[in-house]
Amino acid sequence: MAAVRQLRPDRGFQLWLALPPDQELGPSESIYQKPQDVHAKGPAAVLLGTLGEASSPLKAPSSINYLAVRIKAGETWRYEPPADHTILWIALAAGRLTVPESAEAGELMAFETSNRRL
Image 1 (cartoon, helix red, strand yellow):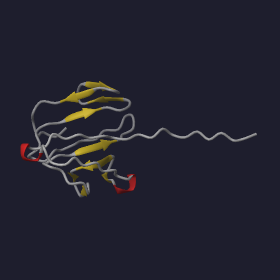
Image 2 (cartoon, one colour; image 1 turned 30 degrees about the horizontal axis):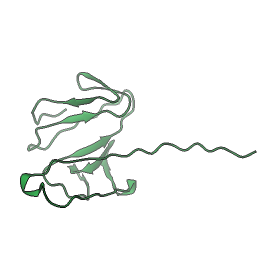
Image 3 (tube, one colour; image 1 turned 90 degrees about the vertical axis):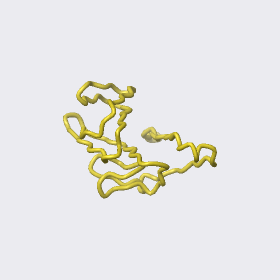
Image 4 (cartoon, one colour; image 1 turned 120 degrees about the vertical axis):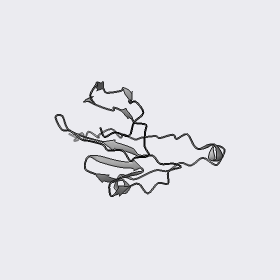
């Protein structure tokens, strides 16, 4: 009798950025980041930008942070954006989140323009 091994499904992120007008018509670029190349601070993996001492090796066309945050049920996490960041959105892959409104898996939530701590 052969043993059956269940594999965990892979997950990935594909991020498309609107470039500044002077870079819009430049060559496109596709970069694969290995999991071991992604730096983290606490539960936040820094896919693009900087969070504290953790930063992404990828070059961003402007000041942007793109984080993948994984927290367990009942845990809390706060994000304090840099002073020059005024737009925040969350795309929830799994579970439920309250910030202060509730969001469910599969939802995208955009916040009012601000650089306040969340």
